[in-house]
Length: 402
Image (cartoon, rainbow, N blue to C red; front, top):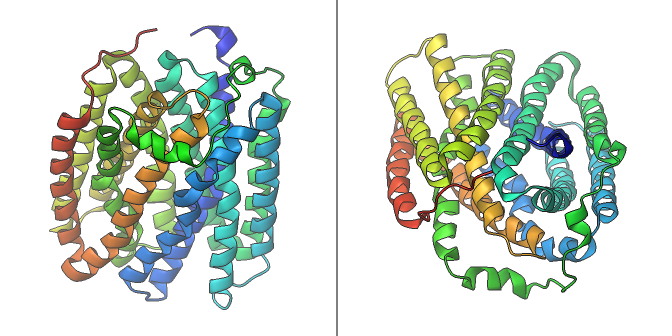
């Protein structure tokens, strides 16, 4: 790797940490608390709807594409979005989760709108700064940053919540968000590719035209189904651990710390694998890890698993998630059109969010009706179908060489 280009990787790493810490915190602490208060699994699954802004962000992605055309513009979008994001999180600290639950959910949705906007700007920065041969490693940084953010939000802050309470943790969280974006503004390097792209305006019609391009329908099939064998298990993992009798502190370490650190390591491995064996072979390999994880959890649900057996399962499912994220992000970057980077990448990631949202919300209903064994069986079946989708839809291209 050229030393001149190396600075972009830790920079991307820090930017993706900034946006993932609060999301992972809100999607982890609240489900655990709700389960302890005897909320149904269906209700916990529906909580995933707070991520709706990340599903709808394609609607304003063209605006960011048009306005963020220079490095200076991108920095401004990131700073404004992140300051607003941090301010909303700080304000939530003054409300009580038990008595102000609906208001807190509303504020979280508003905060996620700002987070989704920041994500669009950072994605544009990443796409324009990475060469095609650097995308797998760049997406290792993107995915790894997200998982390290989840490590803080799901693990460290969940433990902090256990000891210090809601208000103190939310204030600390808002500070984390600001600190994580500072490397972008300390960086003196400019992304020259951003300065020289064509100035044609991007409109809402560009969202529709993306779907009409050759090969895009096959790409969409991959985006919809690739995570399907992972998300249901991930959504119900913490309630499953609660029902097995594990405490908040135990869950924080098992899933929030061990799980997310495993995923972060797997993203680094995934980037190197994809760079060396190519997109197609890597995608099949990553999906195989998902199948192994789904079958393993089906076996766990048929017994009373030991702590060690659970750690193996958690490591498998988080590794599958990390590897799959690198693969999907890299394929999505490959498919963007010039001048429409933010819009096209956002469309594709939103498609994965929609698929994940449906699986996550449905997983609670399946677990409620058929138990965890039924849910994990369903996830293995869906993964088997995804192999067929992948064989049909994934282009047979040689991997991009350095």
